[in-house]
Structures are given as structure tokens and as C-alpha cells.
Amino acid sequence: MNKELKKKEEELQETLARQYELFKAESGDWVKIGGVVLVGGLIALAIVKTRKTRKDRKTEEVLEVLEREGLLTKDIERKLTESSKSSFWPGMGQRLLILGLAFAKEKFLPNLFTAQQGDAEVQEEGR
Image (tube, rainbow, N blue to C red):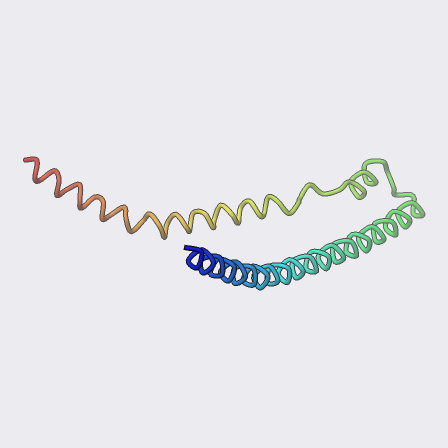
């Protein structure tokens, strides 16, 4: 009995060791993927900030020129300095909607016609 328990203990320890090694290998992959995503996000943030800075600089130059020429009014200044309402999320929502529709089409459209044929057979049997 003790030999069986020791044998089981050794098997469980080996299994645990293999699972631990597998977990370490998989978590290393996830860390690499997370690092790539993080670096991509930082690059995107840097690009957005530089574009915004460039746009702000151009807006300031235009405001200075209009002020020098005497053409600057409160309405024009408000229109030039007001931030635009567009953002990342509406475009992302539209893309997700299209993706969802495409997925539903692939998943449910073939089954739609086969289900109707099955219903027709059931109706014929009922008559």
C-alpha cells in the first residue's frame, strides 16, 4: 500500500512539474505579446501627441496672422480653437458592427436554408 502511495506521489509530482513548466512557457509567450501591445500603444500615443502639437502650432500661427491683419473675430477664433468631435470609438464601433454581421452571416446563413428544408419535411409528414 505504501509503495502504491509513493508511486502515486511521484507521478503527481512529475505531473505538477510538467504543468508548471508548461505554465512558465505559456506565460512567457503572453508576456511577449503584452510587451508588443504595450510598445505599439506607446508608439501610437507618441504619434498622436506629435500630430496634435503640430496642429496646435499651425493654429497658433494662423491666429497670429489673422490678428495682425485685423481679421480675427471671436467667432473665427472659436471655430479654429474648438476641438473636433471625432474620436476613435465611433469608427471602432462601426468596424465591430460590420465584423459581427459578417460573423453572423457566416454562422447562421447556411443553417437558415437547411432549417427551412427540415421544416418542410416535417410539414409533409404531418399531412
